[in-house]
Image (cartoon, rainbow, N blue to C red):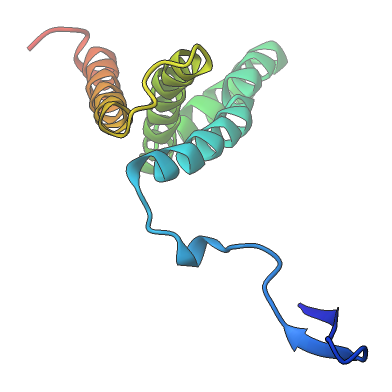
Length: 141
């Protein structure tokens, strides 16, 4: 952006200056990435909520529409979507709990914030895998 500056000589002079720092000048760290992911998973959860709502609508509209919906969900693309939605749910849940602790002023130390971030990622992966295991195998080996 071009801004107009008043020079000591009294005349205006145009020069190029950034209005604010941009993401490209910052060194990325875990909390920064997790903050961005928290927002993205929130959006994904909102759009993903259309699927269970549609399932209820399809069930009300009749057997043909409901079975077609189930058929679409049982495709590889449907499974990938559901896996992503479940992972987004767990990530948003656990990172939201982390944010609640931050609201109380806890866990801001750099080491603690990094450790808690890694813990959130481990919990997300564990709970996502456990949910899929229970869904596919019903808890049986």
